[in-house]
Length: 413
Image (cartoon, rainbow, N blue to C red; front, side, top):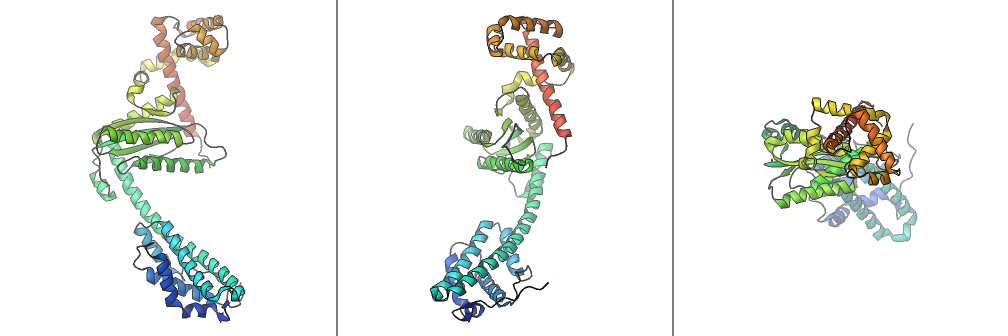
């Protein structure tokens, strides 16, 4: 199917292509003046001239055929070079927009309202041409940016993986162009809870991942190395000087993260030397998991914040025996609610009754039944620690079971 023939666009009775060609040099100068100081590109005069020539050829084409990548091959290559130099893509788009505006204003200055019909048609062709060209140069820019990003991402991941594995990271750091710190703030993040209603899961995940990367980078004095998954993430923040100021800056970023994410985030954190990163990463993940499992509020936690719970939840025969103690609660939710409330309220039966909206005698009855079924009396100070430990172990077991169930589900799209 052939494209329809286009009636030539004229300006003041002269074909627009001819009108622009006669003023090519003046138009290039005008565009360069408009772009002065906006772009450091040494090839800018050539690019501007190329763009004007390309527009002239499009106007000379009797058929309504969009500009192709072959037509604009040199512009696409120029955009790719700007990507390789790290020039922002917004600068590229700004230069194209300002350049075409300068050309259109030159036409308007000379012709004015005397040829409004020609101006209207030229305006429509200018916008269509600008859309086609910027689409092509954007594609070229992003292809190159993606290629560079993939290489950089792989190199950065090599440093991250080496640090977490306890391997010598110097070679990977040199390849990635990163400088290593003596110490790192090791973070394990756990995201939980409902996000913004109506968000597609993948969109929400990418938004949170971008937020985590951005906030951590803003509060770090070096390159942040992070892998963000759902619902967990691990990040390494360089701490070149382990002074209180540096630590406060990093933790300020974590508090910001807790506030801005649309889900609850529990963070296990520790500042350690490079050699201690592998063990610290495992420990921080455990700390974050304990904070989630034991229903603590969102925030940043260190080992000292969960010392007892951390020790209680280590694998072993005691963990299994404590878990068995509360197995009868599977069939008695009211007993479990009563035990938790009783321990939370300092073993005060009246406060417990008020929280549960029952009579104190009901609290006594439930605790008595629980003692007979579970083998410990929460009202006896000597046995109370068993109840507190068993509740902690039960929380962790339930959390781990939920996590296994979640990981077995197919991903949502």
